[in-house]
Length: 201
Image (cartoon, rainbow, N blue to C red):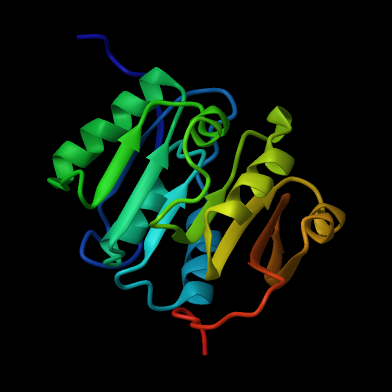
């Protein structure tokens, strides 16, 4: 067995797996969302019971596992790096979470959604976008996300620069925003009528 170069651990901060430690593979560009920012994000989201979640650039997997810990109905984690993907599968096995609850796929997220029907019968309530800063993937990821998001859903985005213009270009509204250290974090919602908001009143 090849020893994996673990860089650090992150902890699930809420729900049934609270305080569970997740090993983080030491891969360039992999940046787990810090605990304090993650706590802020899930305070913004509130009750996510029975919601469908997607992490397009899973990395440490902490956002997806946090969702399942807080009793989201389903989480899809996409991760193109094989070593990182294998680490996520090991965490899933350790936590004894079945694939009906959390599905982890070793694919490039952009190529994955380009290869399937954009008119998904089961769209997502929360989509997380935190690609490597240098990869220049946010524009395409936002374009895809809008097409697979429920009307009452939210898109969470992290980057190391202000994204106000990009957000406006995609006809999205900033619902919550914080700058924490060098991280700009946004909770976005679409600019079309929301008929059944399951997260906020």
